[in-house]
Image (cartoon, rainbow, N blue to C red; front, side, top):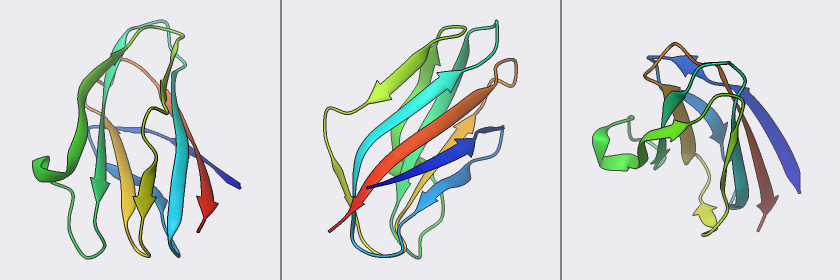
Length: 104
């Protein structure tokens, strides 16, 4: 099992995790560190594709101030080169993401 920590950037979807082999994502924690509520978008993008609305799995997910949202209901299976992108379209809040994965 591996842990990846990522500082979410405002207004730009950046790769929070890129699979280097077949990988299962077991959980994603997104923490709002600020005293303001804020939103995040989460994308799962196949290898060779670019971030677009077609790959968005969470749209404007509201995370209250100083709270954490946990994505753990379904496991994501990624192939080599597939990536998870996270962005904060509302720059008033500051987010960290922690992604737990296990190789297959």
